[in-house]
Amino acid sequence: MDALDIWHLKHRNFIEEKTINPTTGRLTYTHAKLVSAYNSLRNNLPNLFTHKLYKHIGLPNTTNHLDGGVFSQLKKFIKLHQGLAKKRRVKFIDEMLSHY
Image (tube, rainbow, N blue to C red; front, side, top):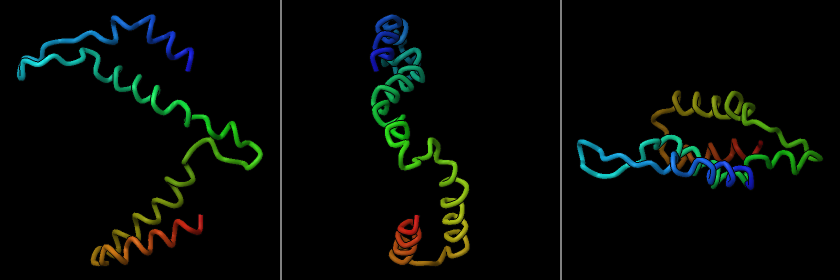
């Protein structure tokens, strides 16, 4: 967190540059994606390396097993059963996720 704050202070003028939007006439950040990335890091940094705090329980450092194993199966099910009522779909998903 300290290193990120030092980086922000060093590059503050560049990060906070604003430009007038020719369409709307409003001031917007010139480097909006950089501002967004910084804000995302600043807000989420406390949770980004949680796996290092819980090495003893084998917490994975990625969500690959969810993306490729759990969520892809749920997507396939939902696609196959498009007519399923929302209440039943939510119940099924809750049940599936409770096993992981």
